Image (cartoon, rainbow, N blue to C red; front, side, top):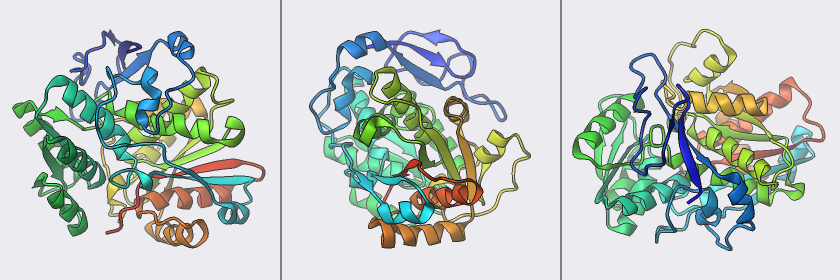
Length: 377
């Protein structure tokens, strides 16, 4: 393991590597208004360069030198998803090239499997028998599937609006499902309280510093797959902020190791109904809460805001908000012109790229849309 230390993104304190680490002991959850003390994992990149090329594996463990685990566990095979050209969409938007990073090819059809693979590995390494998370659906289903495969007891906490389709997936995997009476943020609080009391292993990516390391493999992998090892834009949905921030970290590490030639500009997209990260990044007054069908990113208190803000600054990135009607239309275009069935939340990527194209010329640029999931409700 090449981990050198853990650093709090809020106070900057450094801590030794500890697989049981969670939040910064000094900053904690941050209370009602302040950001939580999210820890970031740092590595010895000189040693990592000496370990190249990466392992000849078709899963997240290909990037073992940049992962906080002792070895590859016998988990479901997450990662190694295709980067699919979308020439019809590229032509319509005036791009030189457009690629769809198709995360629907993962075991439970979503990018969350990358994080779960690392979380499940650490759960096994720590001797845990029970795992838990809060989720609007995808992370919970991912954890339930991996837990079923490994024989772990799985406890998931979902908001009151979790769809019958997603609840059925959880039931089929044998998860113990707790349906909150409130929204995602309430389900998250309930999960943290119950999970901490019972000492279950947490798959809550917002707080567990090691889950992001699984998600960042999407960025590392995309950098390896790109022709010429360069992209101008990488667009992903934003809820808690973990996914796009992790992808940004993956690209930074790819640049550090000489795999990428430059950092792509990160573009995060939220639904107009729930857009706290857009408001915060632009320094404006938060928009009033409304509703959105993009339930997977309907997070009213993004706990990984500091991580995402840092990656956006590093890449000179952007945050956009799009209406549900534009998301629905983009979902249809992804199917008709891209040949991919994306879930509603994932379609915010194309809706966001279209909104960006309406504001500035994309001529000659290469863009990647991260299609985070393909589950239709």
